[in-house]
Image 1 (cartoon, one colour):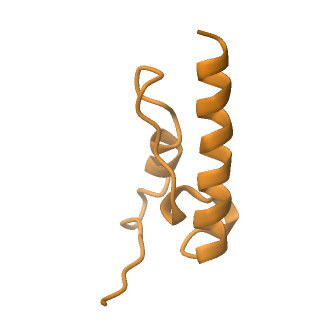
Image 2: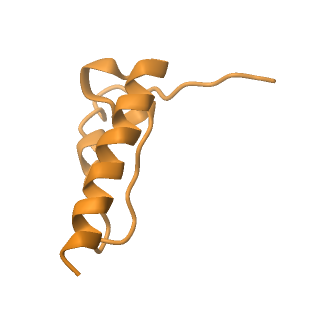
Length: 63
């Protein structure tokens, strides 16, 4: 298997904050590319996924 990781173009790292926001409260993004200080790490990907899972659960609980 080939590996990959996310890297923002110079001056465009703020785009990650946009990706962290749900789209219409229906589409959520998770992964190493939105893991805050742990970007580009497996641990960051896992923690990001867990965080988004909690957001989805909270969103479903309000409906």
